[in-house]
Image (cartoon, rainbow, N blue to C red; front, side, top):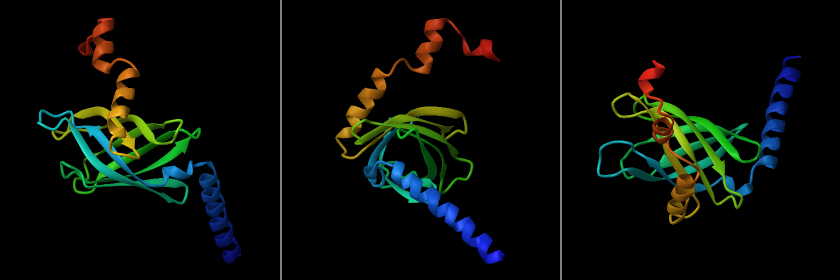
Length: 168
C-alpha cells in the first residue's frame, strides 16, 4: 500500500507537470533580460538584469543574475490563462525583502510586462514596473507598453481628488 500511495502521488505530480508543459509557450522557459523600477532616489531608476525561468514541477522558478545594482532574488510563479505569470519573490540575502509579481505575456511571447510589490530599502511598501524581454532592446519597448496601459496610481489618486490620508 505504501508503494502504491507513493507512486500515485508522484504520478499526479508528473501529470500536473506534463499538463503545465503543454500549456506553456515553449519560449517562456529561457533566460530573459529584465528591468524593474528601483523607486529610490538614486542615479539608477531602473535595475537591469538577467532572469532565468525554469520549470520545477507545477511551478515556474525565477532567478536573477548580472544585476546592475547587485540585488539577488529568486521566486516562484504560475501561469494563468496562458498569459499571466503570477508569483512571489524574495531576496537571497535579506529574508525580510519579499513580495509578489504579476506579468502579462505578449502575443508574440517575446516580452512580459507587469508590476512587482514589495518593500523598498527602507522597509516601506512599494510597487514598480517590471519588464522581461528576450532581447535587451525589447526592455525599452516593454516600458513604453506599460506607460500606454494607463495612469500611475499616484495619477489616479490625484485625478479623483482622493487623498491617501482619507483612507486611513
